[in-house]
Length: 367
Image (cartoon, rainbow, N blue to C red; front, side, top):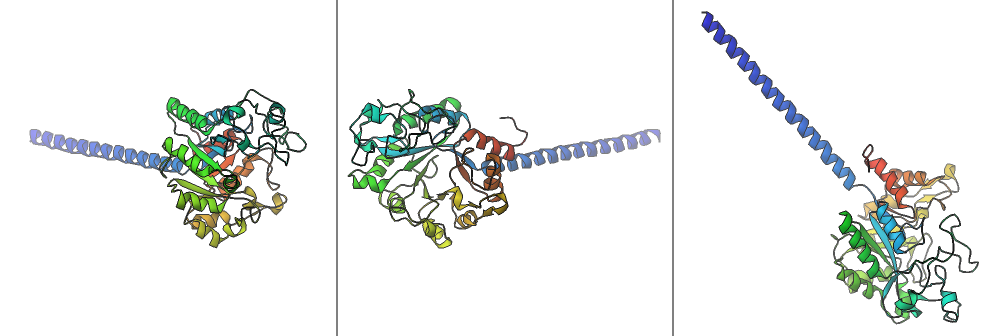
C-alpha cells in the first residue's frame, strides 16, 4: 500500500511538473511572440517615418549646394539630399539653384564683362572648368548684395566650389559605402523650358547621368522633381523616366511656363497629376495659412493628395524664415508631421528635423 501511495504521489508530482514546464514554455512562447509583435510594430513605425530631405544640403549652416553642405547633411541624418541642376556651356549638369551665378559666387570679379544684356551672369555661358575658378559664398540679394539670411554663414568668398552632378553622386555613393547607409538623392530639373529655348536639353543630360549611376526605377533611392508640368509629362512619357517623380508646386497661381498651380492643388488637378507622378512638393504656405497662431488654418491639400495616392513633401523648413502662424521650427514640425501628416520635408536644418522625427518615432532609443 505504501509503495502504491508513493507511486501515486510521484505520478501526481510528475504531472504537476509537466504542467509547470508546459506553462513555462507557453508563457515563454507568449512573451517571445509579444516581443516579436512589438518589434515588428516598431519596425513598421520606423518604415512609415517621414523622410528628411536636406534642402540644398545643410544650407542653414554652410553655403548651399557645396560638397561641404552635402557631407554635413549626410552626417546629420538626412534621408535624401537635394541637387538643383542646370547645364554648363559644355553641357555638364552642375549643382546650382539658379540659372545665374552672381548671387552665390564671385563671378563678376573673376569674369568681368561676361554678363548678358540684363546684367546677369548665366551658368550656361561658362564651362565647368571656368566655374571651378569661382568661389562660392552664402547667398546674397542680386541687387543689394546683402546676405539673404544674415545670421547664417558669413557672407564672403570661400574656397568652396560649384560641384558637378557627377562629383556629388560620387560623394554620396562613397559615404553610403563607408557608413553602410543608403541615403538617397533628390535632383531637380531647373528651368527646363528656358534651357530648351537656349538650344540645350537639361532633362536628357540629367537622366543620362542618373542612369549611369544606377538610378532608374522606383526601387532606387531617387526622387526626380520639377516645377514645370509640361516637363514633368515629358520626363515620364517622352524621355521614359521610370523612377519616382514629383510635381513641385509654387504657392501662387500660374508659372511662367503656363503651369497652373492653383488647379493642380485642387482635387481634380491632383487626380490628373497622379497619373504621372508619385508625389507633390508644395510650398508650405499652401498647407499652413494665417497671420498668427490664433488665425492659423490648415488646408486640405495633404488629405486630398493622399486620397489621390500621392506622397507630400513640402518645402522649406527654415528656423530663420518661419510661417507667420508658427513660433519655432519644432512647432512647424509638429504641425506638418503630427497634425497634417506630410510624408517628408525639405529642410535647411536637417539635424533639427531628423532629431524631431527620431524623438517622435523612436523615443528612448539613442542615436
